[in-house]
Length: 73
Image (cartoon, rainbow, N blue to C red):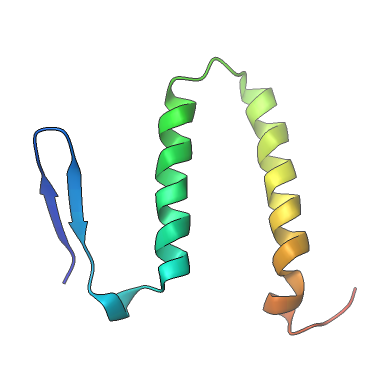
């Protein structure tokens, strides 16, 4: 069971060890951090879209072979 508690200045989330891999949790926390930064950003939608496309392309380049079982284009 996932337990979420809201303290005065923090959100405390408890997740059973076997429910999610450490890498997934790290990616989730990174997303939370990025969302918090973007919330205060003055970047335009187009600037963010270009950056998101770059991040997606880099992620795919790093993970394609793992996800596709080493298949080539």
